[in-house]
Image 1: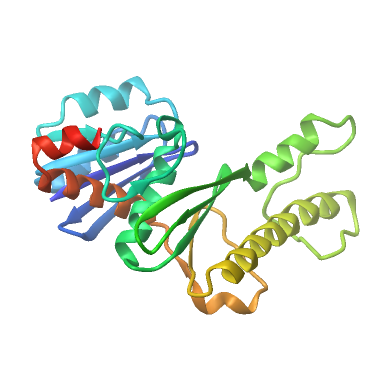
Image 2: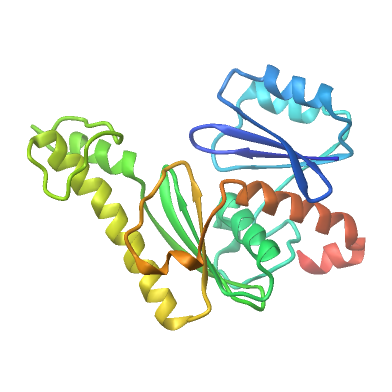
Length: 252
């Protein structure tokens, strides 16, 4: 049994894996460390891996350090991974982005894949059929855009992401929400169309906490998978169990 821990900007996702199959998923916020304790009591884990794009709370760090099984931390540019990283600054690559493309390549080997993660930020990451991660882009997420409109103007209110978002806003609230949410949709749809023109056999994975209603005919090549990062973390953990110490040194 393997344990993966994805520490994000808004929450932490715990997934118990039996081989390559997820058997339980737990989401916890800061201070809910008892959820991790209960998951570890419910399963006999052999090993674990975690990644963090946010600061690791002291309470969580203490638990990670005292696990009764080996826990490894994913460090971009240091931890060996089963793909070829062509990013020019691998040490600064977000571990969530790295794990997501590993997960996508594992689930769709031999296919060009674009991973779109809509959360605090919107990230676009591309991996070739040969397993070459070429890089990607980072854009502000919907909530960040809404907060920026409020923070950097004198009169625009802070609007919630969820709510009525017509194509043409009929009030200040709907104008802001529509501008942001439709702007996000137009941005993502444009990326998808551009990549499909260049890579006709492209597959797209959508992940993250924001649900999207894309208005494009290419939906047949789009998959929604909110476990892409845990799948990638588990694949990296399994890969590091398989390779020899010499191979690990050569990968670093």
